[in-house]
Length: 244
Ligand SMILES: [Zn+2]
Image 1 (cartoon, rainbow, N blue to C red):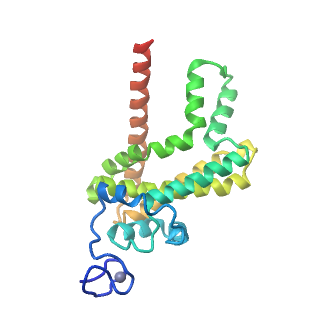
Image 2 (cartoon, rainbow, N blue to C red):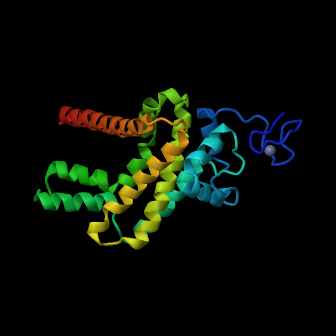
Image 3 (cartoon, rainbow, N blue to C red):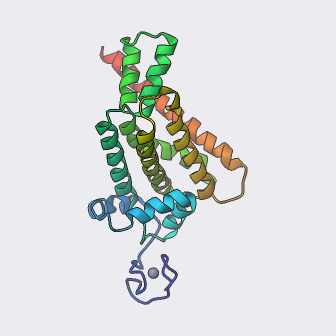
């Protein structure tokens, strides 16, 4: 058979050229859960290669990974766990708020809104914890991208993997910029703009058909994502109202 990783022809269970299993199949939920325990602490296995790929050719790299070139890649969940831990630790050590929290605080001051009002407090809490929520909301973002790009025939878990890698790389962008941009409020929009640009660039590469509609689908992804978040906030607010 032909190895999906390196293209070598081989017999048996493992490729004699690169060592990838012959049983590489399409990614599903079982695959994702299976990878977690034995991949987090094996940094030597593809971590830096994955950083490089995601810097140079993110969309093509992730597409290769899904297509079966898995051997050299660091596993997606493990990658996100490590990059986000590094970012959170760095932000903590440098005593900086996460970027969006700062941006929002400045915005509210600009509007002259009382900082101790109930609604502002909730939103502040959300923004202070936005890094964690970003991580928590990847399944929601994936649902949005899955719906928006449904005609590309990737399944939900494949979208989830795509967004795990993108978010992992965004954590590194935040991490690096946290050394450059510390307290200067006018620059705070920059990391957010850069990480969104990174997302868009990756998607344009990943969905490789030459359709102008890609941009519309990206926009649709963000709109659906916002709608999902508002729906959830709406349900939570309704629930809190009832239990008062
Ligand atoms: Zn091989």
